[in-house]
Length: 317
Image 1: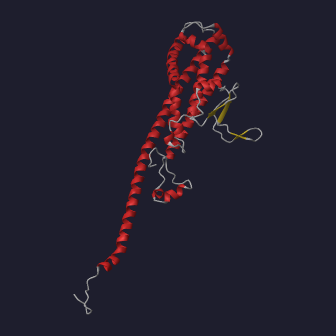
Image 2 (image 1 turned 120 degrees about the vertical axis):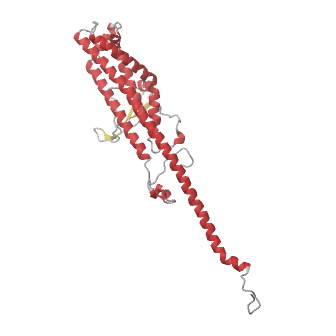
Image 3 (image 1 turned 135 degrees about the vertical axis):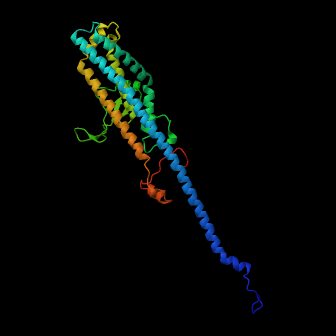
């Protein structure tokens, strides 16, 4: 409809665009922002699913390794001590050369010990590696999963422990990282630094490593196994070597008893550390809370050690 000036009341194309342009711009911004928020929460959900799966895997691996290693170590240690004690009793009573009910019982123990010994000797390295992977690494809060499987420059094994002079009587587990010597100097008792007398190289045994506990127990178990040769000969029904018997008698019963007691302490220390580390795994995967799910807030708080994300092998982590 024409107006008094002969124009039209209909809006011009340019004027109409100028009026709706801010609205379109706002909608575009909201749309982009909504897309970003949606992508953020989608990524967060995928990350949380990844972490949940990793948590279940780590907890299962740690608990299974703990149960497997504890059982594999406890049985041969118990049977080893039983044979030593029974043979000592027979020697003291002067009945070690007789075939009686005592030796019949020893035969049964010997069979069980032989099997337990063979199983542990064949599998101790595997147990140690499992302890490293499923307990030590899984409970390391700073671990980057992408580095798993990378060989360490400070590998420890039974051969090295013997070469560097690991002392089964003196080198006992300790978790005291702030121990002090008689002069008040702080020493880390949770680590034992061994020195090769010939090369002067060092080897560190870390009592906060489940792997090192397994290797230390196996090393001392093998040392005692060699020293109890006449007891094994007696229990198996084989002739007892007189020289071996003399060596056994010269190694007083108190020494063998002390070794057995030390092994119990080592096994208890391993179990305590393993349970401590399993709890660390549980805490590691504990939910951070709602505030850590807010975009921008979680990133800011992570700078102060809060809302720290769990590292995964995926770029989502």
